[in-house]
Image 1 (cartoon, rainbow, N blue to C red):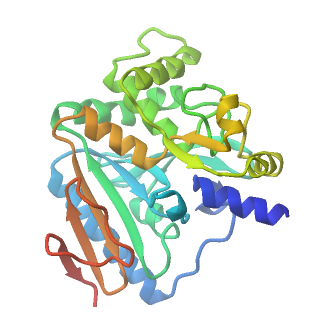
Image 2 (tube, rainbow, N blue to C red):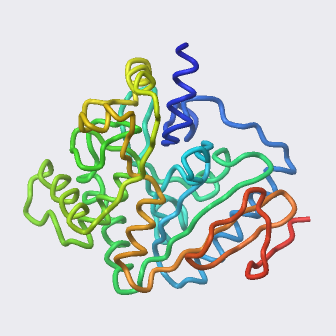
Length: 303
C-alpha cells in the first residue's frame, strides 16, 4: 500500500526532489545507453542555441517528467534558465526537495542535467517561455540575486502546496512568487515572512489560476498525506479537500498567467523522439504525443 501511495503522489504532483547524487524523485534515475545520452545532449545543444538566439538572459523552462496526462498536463517542473549563471551558461535556478534532509533548497543545475534523467530515454519535451523585453531584464536581475531568490524560499516544502498559503511551497510556486515579487515591485523593506503573502495576494489580484487536480476519491488525499513526507493537506481549504481536489502551481498555470498578463511574451516548445528534434513556436496547440511534426514545425534530424 505504501508503494502504491508513493507512486500515486508522484503521478499526481510530479515535483522535483533529490537525494545524494542528483535531481530526481528520491528514486534511481533512468539509465541511458551511450546512444541515448548522445542524442539527449544534442537536444540540449539545440535548445541552448535557441536561447542564445533570443538575445535575452532569462527564460522560464518547464520539463516533462512524471506522466500527468490523466490531468491534461504534460509539464511538471519549472525553473528559470539564466544565461549569466555562476554555474554554467543557461543553468536552471530552481527549488528542489532534498530527500535526505527533508528540506527545500535552491539549486543551479546545468540545462543538460535539468533535462537528462527527467525525460524518458527515447522521447523528451521541454517548454521555453521568453518574457516580454520590458520585463525580462528585471526578472533576470531578481533571479540572479541570490539574497532575493532565497528570501522567497519557504522553510517547508510540499509537492501539492496550496498557492495562496505561506505554510508550504513547491518548486513551481517559488517561480510564481519570484515573478510576482518582481513584476509587482513587492517586498521592499518588508520582513522575509511578509514577502510571500504579498506575492500570493498580488497573484490572486491579478487573476492567477493554479492548476486543478481532481483526484475524485478523498481517501487517496488523506492516504498520500499520511505516508508521503512531501505531501500535505493542512494548507488546503476544507471545501477542496471535501471535493477531493487540489489547487497547485504548475508550469501550465505560470505560463498561462504570463500569456494573459505580459504582452510580447513568446513560447517555444521542443521535443525529440530519438530520430529528430522538433521546434514549435507560438501559443497554439501543444505538441502531440510521440513528438509528431506538423507543417509549421522546424525539424532537425538526429541521425
